[in-house]
Image (spheres, rainbow, N blue to C red):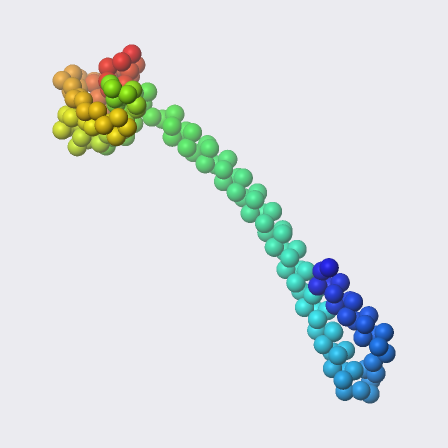
Length: 151
């Protein structure tokens, strides 16, 4: 039962008791209280309707935002270099032990030794040919392979 239905039931009970709402102080009080309850019930129903409408609008906005995110983030992925060198501070290498793709920063690259967080294997990165490259990222690749030299 909704609040409005409960108030209507209460009003029916009061009318069934044949309270004197004109002369009796108690009857007047109950009549006024029932009137206030009717107004409160209608206000609550209006708020519930508004809340439902706002929920639907929020869902529509959320869907639109998802569409925008797909467009924005998909374009960003397409703009990256094929070798994964789109970010100047991070580089992608493949662990020769477990084959897991790793993303390392410039400090690890300069140190020359990498410890794989997956298999805990250590390997050396050979940066000997990385001065002459086409993309200017220092990776030394021709954009047909990753940093580990695999085709």
